[in-house]
Length: 374
Image 1 (cartoon, rainbow, N blue to C red):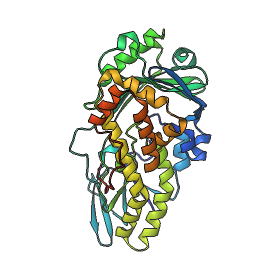
Image 2: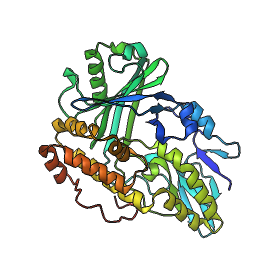
Image 3: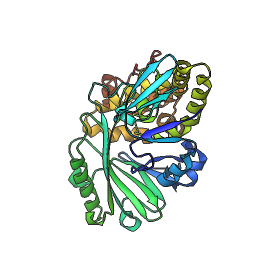
Image 4: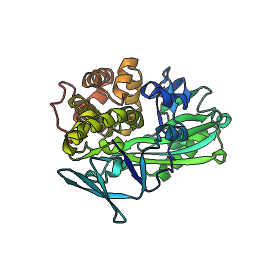
């Protein structure tokens, strides 16, 4: 099977910071990553999770994924046409490329598999500042990171709550990021920047110590695209976890399986290859687990702001197995249901009633849904 990559700048690399639990990444990726052995969790109390967390080295990852036998096409794909013997990818400048099967890896834009959903998305937004390790020490202790810290500095209280996410980018650089997990409409980046400045100032950190700034915005509740001749991948395929925003680890683990399915399917025909790709990415059990997680996101969005830290305090206090099951990139239906049931039983009645009204019903697993049913 030959592969062509279409991108406006095929060798530009990635500017964003990508993190994941180390045990969900391929071993070769972890070897070049910056790894923290433990992560701090704060809702209304303090927890320390001894589970290694990795921040990817984007340059090393790009070199690891690059293949000399891939044809690089500089351009922007804007559409795809399909026939019985194959497909044609249409580029913005008018060029047309023949293909047996088309994979859409355009992220939330979903350029080749239907475009953006019509409804306004719930989005995760964040603003982060990079500082040196000594400067970050009051908020991120040596040897660890912060997965979620929902405690608010005095001057950032009020309105929808946000949390601190802090990770080590190397031996002497730390990213301190003020994050809105999900909100519709999204919290503005300007507000997050003010909250981050206030949080750092209250910790005795001079905002002028920042070395760089990172800005984040992406949807977390896009419905799964419907099956067709284009096979979506990564964020375009709905890989974004609605409770964490993670998708990269799942994409890295799924890529070899998708390649094998497409290669085998093409021996029969392009339509067969596309169906095989869809089945690898979204088997029925994965779809139903995704539906449950989307319900939990809707329920979270329905909570009053003052109850959100208490909700996460209950999640952080769950046994580790439940936390792992719910946050897994490729979670099972049974594991997701167990985690959600345990969380529902642990939260106080004030939150439990809100969760039921918000759609987090846990009495029975959801009926089987087709793709796009979330």
